[in-house]
Amino acid sequence: NAGVTQTPKFQVLKTGQSMTLQCAQDMNHNSMYWYRQDPGMGLRLIYYSASEGTTDKGEVPNGYNVSRLNKREFSLRLESAAPSQTSVYFCASGRELNQPQHFGDGTRLSIL
Amino acid sequence: QKEVEQDPGPLSVPEGAIVSLNCTYSNSAFQYFMWYRQYSRKGPELLMYTYSSGNKEDGRFTAQVDKSSKYISLFIRDSQPSDSATYLCAMRYGQNFVFGPGTRLSVLP
Image (cartoon, rainbow over all chains, first blue to last red; front, side, top):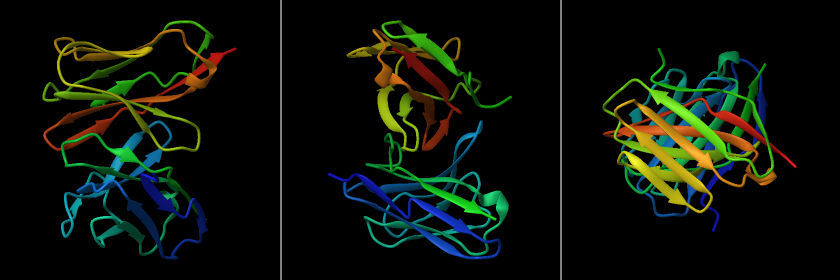
């Protein structure tokens, strides 16, 4: 029972490069989320998807795009990476939007 | 003022101690409260989920909510070295979740 799986676990990029972070869940959850976690700031919501076919902006969406590929998969894309996007990125899923979320183990992204 | 505040710690206690972790919040619209545990280099793991004011117990963990004071607590009894982690509080109103920055706990053998 894998839960929420994120790939890759680590990545180093140069400024201006693009990258897609992958997330898949096997819990048949409807809602999925992307967060970033920075020291002292808690988890901040980037984008979320209430259900397959829908996506919405969260608190810090600038510089990111998402795709809800199907019910299981929700990807996060950085089109032109910037050093300010150096962070740990977490994907999460929940049964519905108002239910507690279950998290993956994160992608540690450094942008030089 | 941040919506959810949490002492970042680190908090160090001896094995067997009772641990008290706390969060305060400013938005009275928050109705649901959660505690997550996050081990180093891992994702947050849901520990407790509660709605009403009062206490909820699960094994060695007790979550306490005081909506009138906008204050929530997590108590850990008989703390173990395996409890060493960062503890995040989280709150929800409607479809909006807000997470605290976390308190780092070390339980020393």
